[in-house]
Image (cartoon, rainbow, N blue to C red; front, side, top):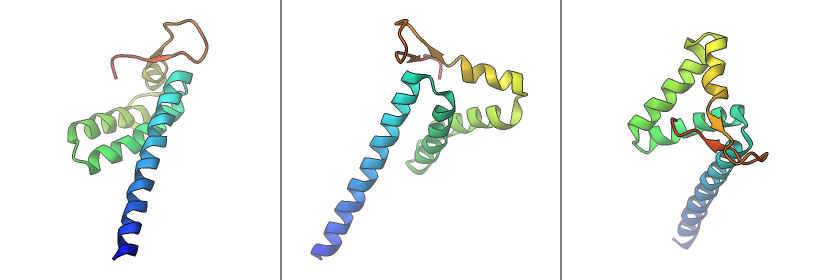
Length: 101
């Protein structure tokens, strides 16, 4: 019983660590303006939201990713990708996420 309890705690802590690192990576990608990494994290967030029952968030993520990868032509798909971040501080590495995500 103790071994099962220990394994359960290790699993919970490992999942918490993965989610924390995912969040910190997402935050860092936003600050640095790394648009490709943000889209990669959105793929994971879509799956997490779907698994946790946040249906509307997962639908929005799916819609955004589908438009970017499949539906929009290349010139229109690049526009939302590059216009998603603004630098209100004027310093490198201080980008903010655009409010309309």
